[in-house]
Length: 85
Image 1 (cartoon, rainbow, N blue to C red):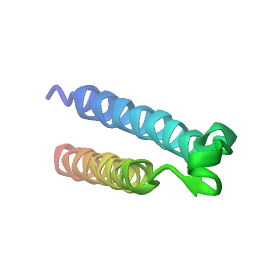
Image 2: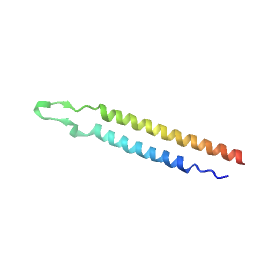
Image 3: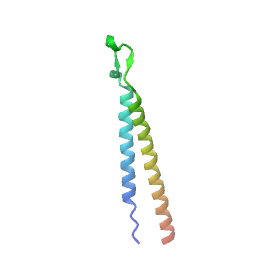
Image 4: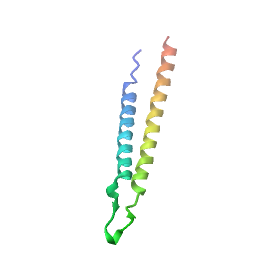
């Protein structure tokens, strides 16, 4: 019996890596001091933070989904090994 779970694990791992990269990108965008514009006409005004905050939440959901794929794949492989033993 050939059990190949490598594909689901590698796809989930790529999802984890993508979610981490997007979270870092969003966090850097939120914390960027250049976001603050000290020009007279916009003194004390911040650019909208909604987009990077939404991106941060999306990356969290991608991470959670990828972790769930790894968890289910692990359980499936374990069950198949138990059946074949």
